[in-house]
Image 1: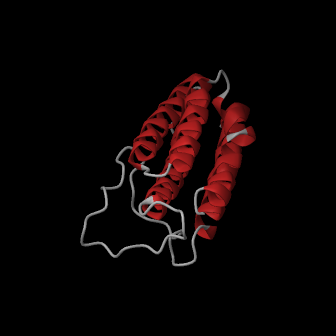
Image 2: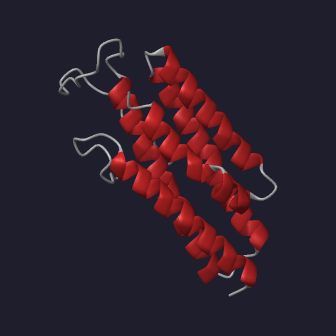
Length: 166
């Protein structure tokens, strides 16, 4: 296994752990539990028969659902980033091949977060998620996605935990 592959695997594992930890802290009713959400398939839109959340005064009715969906997307995306890195080291892919994989995952994740931003009924949440999607786009365009993951991506889940679940 090359040094670059080991470094990428470690960095991606750190990112996944940070996202997982942040995802598990969101909400108090199990919202942070890992869910089987593919990072390339956004969660289904809520239906009318789903129980209503209890948003605080001044919070849009779907804020909790949108924020939970984004939590699940970030968790699933983090797992995919880690799996891509692990698979790349086992398959002995080049650093460039792994970087292309990571960039593709980040690009898909940005699109999915952007889709959730469009669902948000509250302007502040829409803005927060749109900005998050732009950050993910920047990671997908980064010349060093592993460095971007460990310097920028790790800050996204805690920021959303603080600001999305209001």
